[in-house]
Length: 506
Image 1 (tube, rainbow, N blue to C red):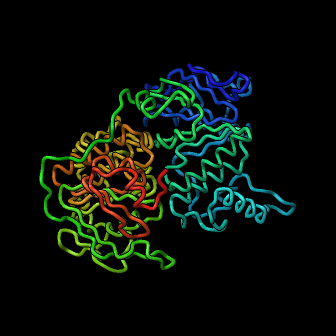
Image 2: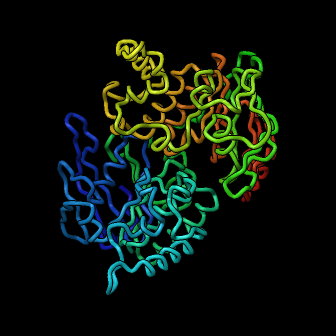
Image 3: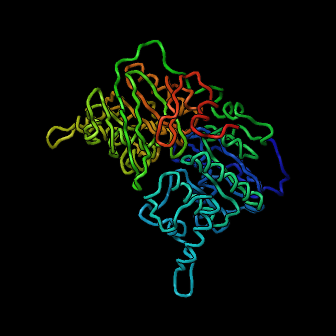
């Protein structure tokens, strides 16, 4: 293993860490070092063991065997609070905020600032403003979290971790919902923290982005550490090779067939936000049967608002949404799904899955009417659909009865996609379908979309990752401030896409 610093600069070590859940071995003797004042980036596919290792290091779960050494002495964390008291904090991939509470109350929940007469709410609000200023985000401390967009909620989660003044800060997918400018701010904060001696453990599926911030890289694969090296010795090819055993791309646009008729036409659609601003501004766009269209844009470009209006999650304030020639702007979400127009939402945890249901129940939820006769549900017919869907979208699970929370992020995303495909859509909308999933799972998702397009499905997917535009899309549409700024074919360059979106090209 490459060694970049003297042993006295290692603040925490994991030695021969193993974790088993029954017959499943999540970790198999992992060796892991965290260096003082450095960013150690942990790479690996969904299910490689990254989150399990981080939960052990932060006291959330206990290892089956192995040892954690902190400041040269063995330690045993009995809880997350115990680890926090020793200076270790974690920002989880899936947000753990209380949506009905304010930003201030979320940041200080469970460790309120006390004054002589009780909780010092004024000081908490002041500290919240300081944290928002540090993160360059103009968010009022008293704003309910549920009123924030997903990227801003991620900022609140980061602010809560920063407020603890940790010695070791674990960041599990901290940029999954952030815009490019928000990522730049976060990276400045990380460099400021490491300059003060704080150690960062960074986990991300955005490989190129993670390379910008890392000082030392570690790769996990199937619960084992496959590689470790300083930043000077690695590149993107090194990461992918050690993660998946081969260097591959995300696919190419499916060919060898003709597109069908226009399946969906958005004509002069306008959507306003709560303040009356046009987040979708007189936009027109169409997609044909068998065609895959990618919508690219920065945060705030209007991608999500446009897709949610088409799916019926929000209304439109002008224009038409023509699905197979009929205006569906006034139809309910359920009626649109029944007719063949379905959306895979951006936030799978909040909008795509029911955590108390099994894999199979989640998979069949949108198609439940097909199994109901009077007051009875045909479990046999439902099981046939679930088993078929699991096979078609290649979900790695022990079966339909498995808990949805037992799946990796990539497999949960496949369940959401499989749920909507089970409704037999003519048009499938996907908002950031690869958010929070690894490169192997991304490739599987895009292969799935390409296969269904060959069968005649019209696909529109949005992304904030420019590299994904050049995967399976036949056409790339760039949005900027609620409007279409440009349209390109699959042979366009990344620089042209970024320039059309208003993003700075280095």
